[in-house]
Length: 359
Ligand SMILES: *Cc1c(COP(=O)(O)O)cnc(C)c1O
Image (cartoon, rainbow, N blue to C red; front, side, top):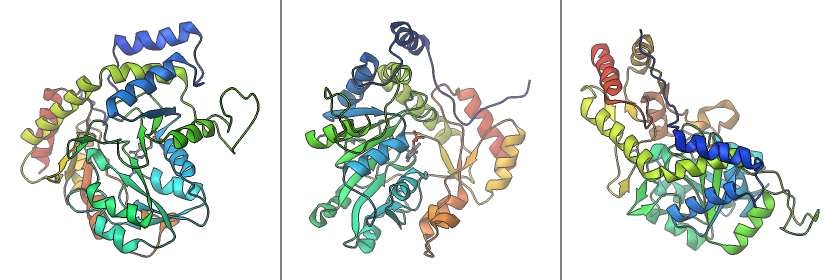
């Protein structure tokens, strides 16, 4: 039988199954803050990342929206976002009526280039969304100058569960940090996300915001304009079970990354790593000038791959007329290979063999 290797798949065990059914059987299927499944997920992530407040939300995109709205970002504000990343930061900035200001990424870290951030800073810039792109942390020390300008920092750690910046875990930086628990992320709830902060008032404000603008215990009293941004208990139950397996899931992904490092043929580029970073393997990325041909050869052999993110300001609806040389080079040459905790060495060998023959 022909091999079929997907680009991503969740690692689900009896543990997730038991927790999911326990939530179902208990009748806790909504996402209200009093749900023990929501609380369990939030407590586990709070403990793991060492942030005082964690709020489970419906996905990583809503997490960014809640973060930016809670920080007071709105129409007439500019927000700096990376030119190379998944679309959410830019889309959310537009959704809330603000303007994304794109900044090129550093050629090594593939995250916001701090010099470029400085160059594009104006009094209109209210916040910066730093993304820990494809498992690699942004350069947070080099972004500290933002404090002097009173520019707020949001960390989007959606692709970097367990990565470290100078020994500190991603997801612990910025006034608010966010995670996604989408099915292809390092730790998943199927659909889901989280906002994290140390600030009491921000946490209370965000809790209200995701619950229709209602403070707890005041009935149908809506203190702010809110939304429904909650994670439901069924997702939270899966997410909490995955949190129990955090170390295992991370270790397995790291192993997959090491197998690729070892077995990839000469002639494909590997992603660079900054000296201050301990990245995680999210989607293993190769660099090649022959991307279409290699992707076709892999597809022919039953291996699903995907070109990396488009440089966002090259998309017509985000175009700004500028060039982003580092982002554009990565966008043009980067290819995501299958990466998930349960991927076997045998499959990595197979994928690397297909690549070797194609080259
Ligand atoms: C996946 C992802 C998101 C969005 O998460 P969803 O849960 O899919 O909404 C946001 N930012 C980055 C960097 C991501 O990779």
